[in-house]
Length: 212
Image (cartoon, rainbow, N blue to C red):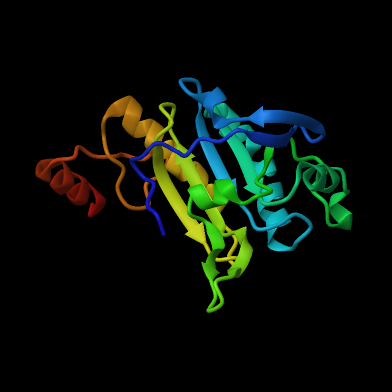
């Protein structure tokens, strides 16, 4: 599994559905460079079971991300037409109607491969034929990308394990706090709590204050 933290996020240009119903060609995260941080997350497939819980949970918290000037973008190996159909299916019928943030189509799996979250790989058999081993879908990868296009945080869950949207928000808060104040964020830090200087003295002071 590749570690992309500290590296430029792989670029792409592909089809997407935005605002719940609008098809967009050549959608790229480059549009956010210099303007917004991005939460870019992968999920296995449309019309499945854990996936809608995550996507709807992101939509439920979308105002919190927007308040922090952060774009949320989802991605799976489904076509733009599958995305559109799912986005226009009522939630009581297994759909995600009401979700407005962009869903990217990675129909060939190239984006998932570049972010190293594809849950399988191609290899040659004994006769020299190419076969795909594993599942041709994405793991539940999540990447926090800063305004310079650099990945600052990543987490990858196996297919059955849903993510914490609150933790994604906490990571956004930690990154923005560090960039604004220069102080680092200790374990379990939340917005509004004290951080610390990245020095031995700073650690000692922080721990001493925590013990009181």
